[in-house]
Length: 329
Image (cartoon, rainbow, N blue to C red; front, side, top):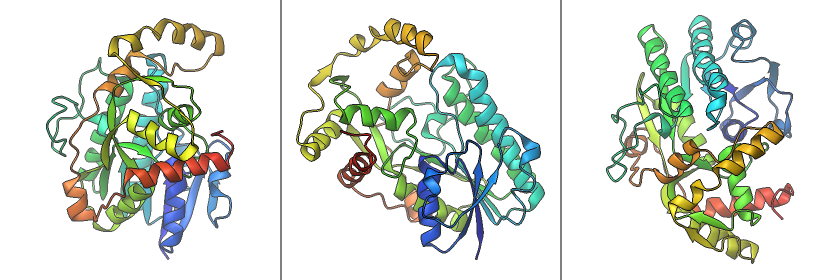
């Protein structure tokens, strides 16, 4: 059986990749960088201590690996953490590419993001040839994903067989340590976001993303990037789905965009007090209100067989998962 290595294996995408790869009879190796093994429970995976930002730790991990799924990333929209963001998303990606090339890995699937592209015009279809972010003053996370992708392309020229995946906003079950996007879904379900701006986004089920990423490891063209999306919906619609499932109101209504900015000073003071990154920042608001409305994912559908399920199924399974774990009341 082929040996698949997952970076970021204890995260949302990594957790679901473990499940799908196991189903497809792969041997799975995971990089353990934080000691959190909840995503691995019940699965026969090989766990090796390592850190993508520490290149010397990677050489034994990449030995005999057939395919690498590079999902590890730092999703943070607080500009005070720009150095850490680049360390993981750019320098870490360079280390993964170097280790893959040195070990003779047959295929690398790099997980970028739709945030690596310039968003405007948001009404036009988002396609793979959209220009990548190159403005040094852009959202640090967005720029890091664009620069990480450019690095992967450079390694393709050196002989690395890599394909690039651009997910839209990833939602779904089996997230054992929710990051920024999924934690906000939990907060919404728990009624902690009673009022929201009237925004929407394109959402892709993490399980469909995993299936498509595995297909890319077999069918993806070298150096080709694939946008992998699902359906565009308003956050208020997701709140309605949660309301039906939970049988209680989770969102009271929507607010004008400018009202959202009034919370920025409070969030800054809260961050100073807790020592944690800000959830609400100018960059968060920029990201939330500029989601591309038309994401056809045509290339992924035609070449990788991408077939996203209805969002209604995704939200139901996501809420059920977090209820079972006690994170949604």
